[in-house]
Length: 308
Image (cartoon, rainbow, N blue to C red; front, side, top):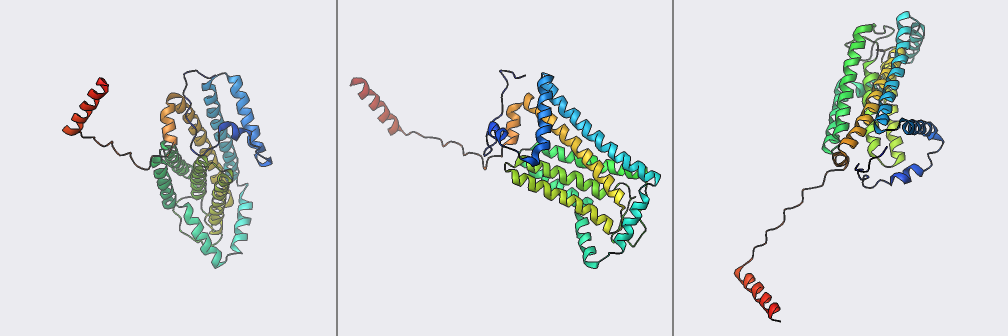
């Protein structure tokens, strides 16, 4: 339900009007998203209120988290029961038989993209950029999601305490237990979040899809590199990706809900945060100084106008 006194923030510069974007055909690739957003709009109309729409995002975040947690729990249960061990050992033996020095060096370079130092550096640079460009909610979201993922992964590793594979000599050093993969989980959370926030700021559709595709490829390559280097079972990677996507989806849904609340509570302030900062502050107006001659001429002109 709309309110007559509600202020709607202006659209971002260079973006098409909202009606034009909604009227564009999405194509067959976007069928799922059309169905999802149609369902959300239908629920929103029947919900009869702004806070009900916010509640939808909250429920959606909870559903994403529950589905991801359920899938993770299924994999974790299979690992505890030993149901995945046969498949894990088969894959590890196949990888051991195909060890090539050039591929091992490439795997080392790729796996470095999922280490804590690189992940923290990416988060720091992206967060600083978002903060300086007045997207402070996005910067806070990225920091919260990253810290939460690191804490959750350490908790899960301590809980399961699965030994590392011993099929062949490791290609890198490791410090913690195996399940779930910390590289896979942190890469999934950070790269998917950065891709979402970058795509959210981009108006061109093909660039948005390119950013998301590159992020998904990085996540897959980092996970594969951990298996190739012999430090993780495939089930470790699968579990890390599942719980990573669950946590990232939950955080993103919460972010959209908080953004809606912020736009309603302070639409002008939210609009300012969504606009890029000015290139420089405008110069102060120059002070005009009048001389005695200027004053005398102004008085004489006024007298002539009055006499005329």
